[in-house]
Length: 257
Image 1 (tube, helix red, strand yellow):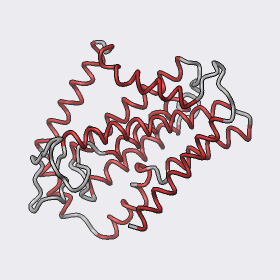
Image 2 (cartoon, rainbow, N blue to C red; image 1 turned 90 degrees about the vertical axis):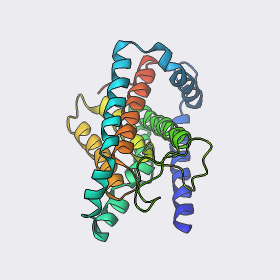
Image 3 (spheres, one colour; image 1 turned 90 degrees about the horizontal axis):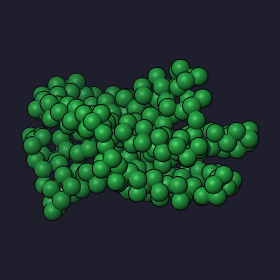
Image 4 (tube, rainbow, N blue to C red; image 1 turned 120 degrees about the vertical axis):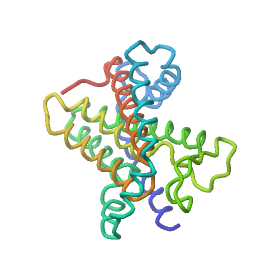
């Protein structure tokens, strides 16, 4: 309980620092960062009504991939269960997974924002805030999915059963397994960083997506999620990151460099 409380306090402080960093300088259109985020949230909720064929094809592809993995969730969990060790689980849990819950990623974004302020390079501040926005949106979307489906985690039943969904009226004691919030948040931030820095810094996409992939894999390895949860969460994160990048670039707040 103490560790969870300390984690939440640390994340809150880091997020507040990033907000302060980004609010120091007014936007060119006199629109505050919080207002930009509010407008983007409304646009994201209504985005499906503006989808074209390519968007629907992506949705169908992700849904199909999730459904296929769903059929193999038990087999994947059974294989990984026989390979787990306490040392490997600790490395995954304490060294990798925090990139998905904000313990590492939010302070890094805050540091990027402060670096931009100190150097007088506003683009880094905007990238930091875009990363925060993508983190919040993806985490919110994943949380809604968890509540709607209330799918049992591998550790919720003995033996594990990937076919148990309680739905929004269920009373699951945790927040559900589908989709992985760690995966969605990690890939959302990674997508923003890769989109902004990838053109000139070729190593950024490799590092960002590599870490996001490691976060996603660690959640499955540690038995916190089924493979289909992780895949769907990662897809949600990529879509969210691309949406945030597109919206902020259309306002002239972001550029590729």
